[in-house]
Image (tube, rainbow, N blue to C red; front, side, top):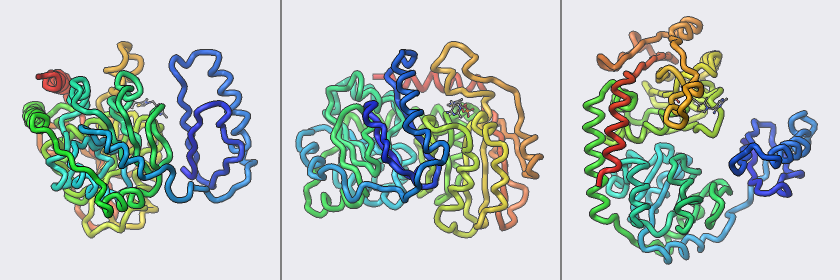
Amino acid sequence: VSSCCDIETIADIPSEERFERKPLQLNVCFDEPVLTGDRAVWLSLINEKLSPLLTGACEVHPARHPPGIVGQPSVVEEFLKQCERPLVIVGALCPPDAPVVAQFLSCLGAPVWAEASSQLLSLPELKPLLLRSGNGFVRKLFDQGRFDGVLRIGGVPSPRVWRDLDERLSHLPVCVISEQPFLGLERGELVAGPLPLILSPLLETGSVPSYTVAHDIRAADDVRRAGIAELLGRYPKSEVGMLARIAAHVPARAQVYLGNSLPIREWEIATVSGGPERALYGVSRGANGIDGQLSTFLGWVNSNRKPEPASEAWAIVGDLTALYDLNAFWALRHLEYPLSLRVVVLNNGGGQIFSRMFSSQLFLNQHTISFKGLSEMWGLECLEWSGEHALPVASSDAPGPNLLLIEARPCDTQSAHFWKEFERLQASA
Ligand SMILES: Cc1ncc(C[n+]2csc(CCOP(=O)(O)OP(=O)(O)O)c2C)c(N)n1
């Protein structure tokens, strides 16, 4: 996306904004419920304002990123001065920014809840700070009043607890340090710009206060983490259990792309006992379309650092997501580097993210499609994996771009048991 802007009121719809010749994504958030007259007004205004862009009649200029930093970095210092027990939430980070963020977090010493897309989960120096037992546990800590402020670093986090900060946790102060000028909430302090420009001066001037992770929080997280590891071992054919087995198989420094929908949420649980060391993560979340994700994966690996010999790149996506991009492998011939590509389609027979949101099965788009036909279409090796045996490996490890499609079919019963016990574990005292 070449340019971003926050559209908070109708008057904010940009009329002069100009975009580079690149895909443009507009996220328009409506207050719920959306079926009011306002929606029609919005739609017609958006249409009117943006129609020049859609017809190609707009002038094309380079993107205008805000120069330097938006907001005062001193806001971060002020925010931290007011907090005795902050929680740091780390969303998506650009890989080159991860070291300075890790240094800042180590210095700060506060508990950290990081998404896989933060690139931080496997850093040994952060292990004592990371809370790894999931959304339910963190929500519980909020309910117990264990945090008196939230510092977000990086992209807008996907877990529910982030949105709670606009709802039942709206009394807690929030400060955001991000590359993009988006708060992702209706409130809070924002300092936006290149993260090293914001964080390095704080580190250099010694103005980062020092916190600790409370012993009982550390202990409760460790107990739950061990409990989750035990569940993963007990239900190896559940969806998360199979993801954990995949994670154990992915080599260090591999590129890992997580696509919609559950794999993104499940990966953090699946790697509680450790995932691939120093993996490079790319993530495309539910707010984005589920379409085009396999193509995105191929484009992403092609644009990443030149891989080391025998380097592997893994994509893990849902079945509907894969079905929305059947033509993706066309791009294989354009890959510039020899890579071993592993595309795992987690075939749970539909969009299971909706199974815990809606009572009607209609939302799931259930099916019994097999992905063998897709591999035949593109001449790819395809292996089915029901979790009964070890994860299958490619029959040929010949150098050069090669792609193995793994259709993983989790066991519904084991998945149901896993989630039931997982939720019980989260809720435990
Ligand atoms: C183009 C597009 N259509 C519909 C959606 C709404 N949507 C979000 S997640 C999802 C289901 C994804 O299913 P699947 O890839 O099988 O993953 P699972 O939920 O099983 O993990 C859908 C349809 C979307 N994000 N983009």
